[in-house]
Image 1 (tube, rainbow, N blue to C red):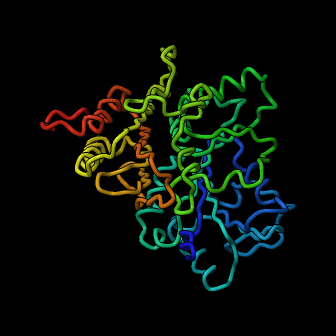
Image 2 (tube, rainbow, N blue to C red):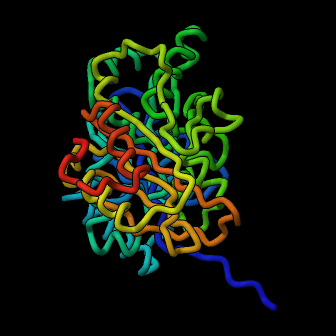
Image 3 (cartoon, rainbow, N blue to C red):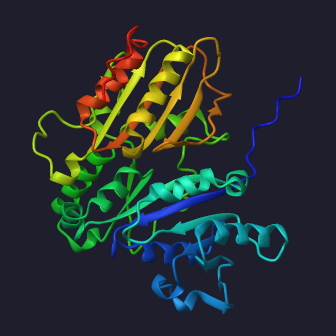
Length: 366
């Protein structure tokens, strides 16, 4: 008997590159565009003049697109992002240009949430592109001060799938390590890589999201699992309760860091659909603007396979079923990253799921 075809997704993968002013986004971009190996990429920047692209990489320029020697493209946002992306996609479908991936570089002050929502809300983009991951560049030399002064930088860290630590060669090893520890506290599930002059291992920026039809169970679990080495042996050791994301000894947080709350829960048994829907609807309705990201693998009663879900504020990707999930493990894992919601509020929210919702839902935990 022939094996069923592997699931495919023909939509263009989009990587969102963010990071505060001077963090090193352009250095990373130049390294990606100058690579001799790798996919052809279309890069969307705000303006060519602000991008600081390495002119030695540029082969030809027209009104709208810069062509790089590697075959990659770069264009600036003209009008709004949705129109710029739609124009690129149309030109690709017509055979005028060729690329396999898209990188969107944000301004240093931008929160990633609005761009993620644009990709989901715009009907044309939702059909033609998928979010492949959020990459945030963090400057080891000035990053601590930036996080203290600029809450936008804290939000950029909290929303990342991958954190790229730059300029580690400019600071003592202990300083870089302390900054890395702070980043891990703000975003426990994000992988952290150190870049040397913007260079990273080949392919490190791609396939970051666990919300992919081609993702393996291991990849999706990695997307949800806290990266703390202390939890590496058994990252979901608190199977029926809430998994702490910060050390109990960490009693004093910088003011901006304290505004970010992260909580996760693992549930042993499948969730009644009404309980999951009511929990999610309540969370979005009451605190939607403050939800930076919600993601998880969920088993619902009456459905054999789990599905992966992901949302930003009140906008959610279509859920993706996990067809190759190993038998026997029917635990649901949910991670919430929120702004201006204290951690006890997140705990009480997720307790609604653990209790399969109280009979009287008038006293909601927000």
